[in-house]
Image (cartoon, rainbow, N blue to C red; front, side, top):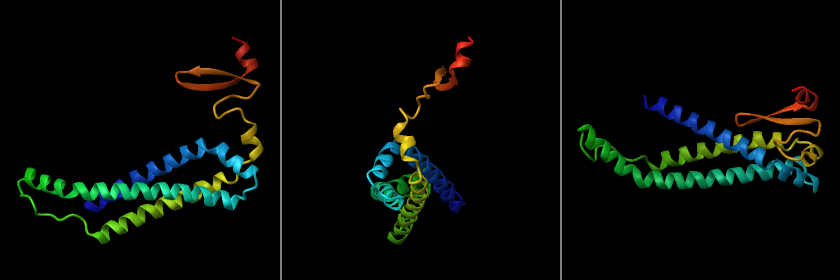
Length: 161
């Protein structure tokens, strides 16, 4: 039962990590294009992106482990008291378990970062730097808003209204 809970939580964390990395990729696409324009090879761009994402993941793991260790004892005792078992029944996770979990989280973040960075390193520099922005349509299109989503349609279609 606890293994299934850990697996579900790990899947939620991995999904969150992939989403955050994909959004970060989109936000920094112009920066990557500039790095490539000044002469970085795709391997160097990949290494730069993997390093930055892995460093961010390492900081998150360290802060999360520190906060987790600080509150674990109190939460275990609180659960024991509220369920009628009594305080002091369970023990916080061992240092080995924390290290294994932290290493798995860092490995997952690094692998995810590698695949996204490798894909990002293949972008066409001219296409990214020439584009006026992520959500702006080309000059032959008009932007129509449906709710909050912009929809680009050709000027010919827009002029028919």
